[in-house]
Length: 243
Image (cartoon, rainbow, N blue to C red; front, top):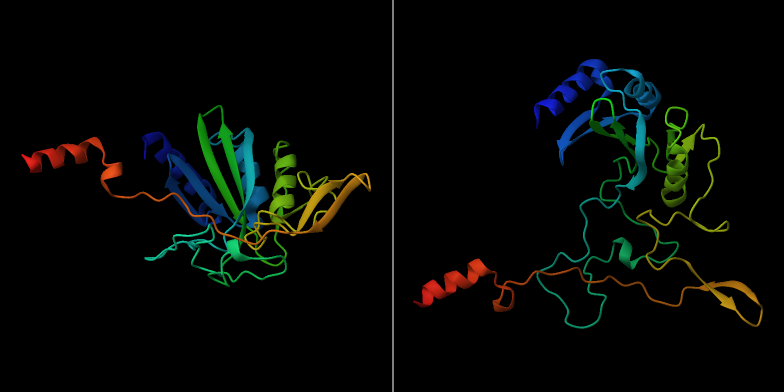
């Protein structure tokens, strides 16, 4: 960690104390976790205090942690046919609409709202993460009164993840259709969706139909250690061994 980031981390800890639940340095940036109850107070200080001066919210997104650490293709054996080679049938790739996804830790908080802030005055960046305290009805306060740029970002997070932002001036869907059911970035939303949409030339309108494809899990990129993928170092070692 650079001296500048160390000073930033110390300033955050000294100013907010116990309000910071966790502080992590990763990817050359600092991330702090705070509770939803402290979000407005902490965000206001981050914007107004000269030691921080985070004038702009660059991005805000939702995160669903319900399947954190779970993968569908971790196995010592694999099939040589077809695309649906996932071996863990409890994960999202095998879901159809209405199925329930079993979380890895039922007691863990599932949904988080993550903000990315920038201070032009101090040339600092900061990531702030806030978990919703209720997994069934996730709610966090809106920061639109602090950073107006949060408006559409919070609408996107609500649309895709179903996270409610209290006191938002106009919380409604922004990417999906008006009659869309569910939140497509949630881990329990089927990858194939729940309806298909097409234009019917006879009825001269768009119609919705049940999904006609089967759930499937695509195979991730696999790195193979054989003669086809030897790098230059490997080739040199083989030549030396042959000599």
